[in-house]
Image (cartoon, rainbow, N blue to C red):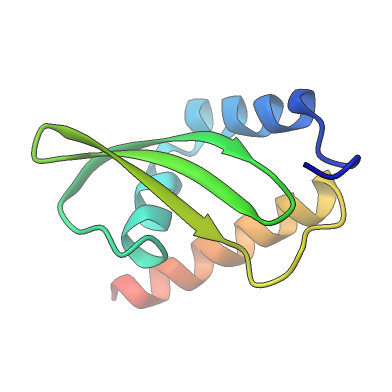
Length: 94
């Protein structure tokens, strides 16, 4: 974990995403994790290289690791990258 991605930053981002953007996490699992039939998903952690999710698929918890297309610089980069990824995932879902 880079110095810019402390456990505090990871847990703050995960809490925000899980509380306010659960639908986006499902989209990430489908579009970037290659998991179909996702009923729900949670973000477990995020670091400069990627994010770890758990997805509910047919009643089972499936671990999903999604690599970012670049190494994140800081929390603001994470914010912008997650927004860009959800827009990309919505386009893929159409």
